[in-house]
Image (tube, rainbow, N blue to C red):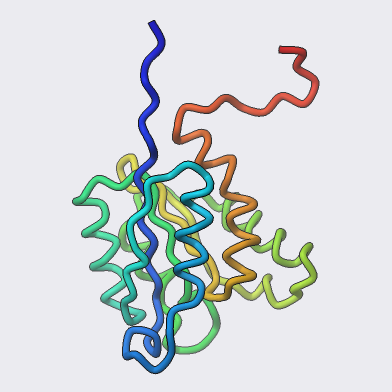
Length: 166
């Protein structure tokens, strides 16, 4: 008898000082929530927090709540206030540099040369995958194109085999 596959529980966290303060609306978080839902996840959020320590607190809360995937948007740039990668490194146990490298490469391939400046990281804490995406709707879309396979793997999907006849 095959095991029932349960939906992946995902949380979206938007790291933005200005969106958290109500200066402008969060635009990338809702896009990310929709894309994760389209990928088959049960999604909560976006939870909008200022960058820095509140990001670490939100990540730790997500781990305590047992999410399978946590994807952040925002806080990955070069400004002094962009601290999401540092907060993420405080929480993850094992970094997965290939995901972050693929995210930057996908953005550059999509014609966004500044994508290589993103400092986002990806890693695992316990059984939770945590990935940082840029704070733009385009960066979120490019990132989800890369993350689709990782999400499939978390849900028990098989590796894609280009020449498999099965």
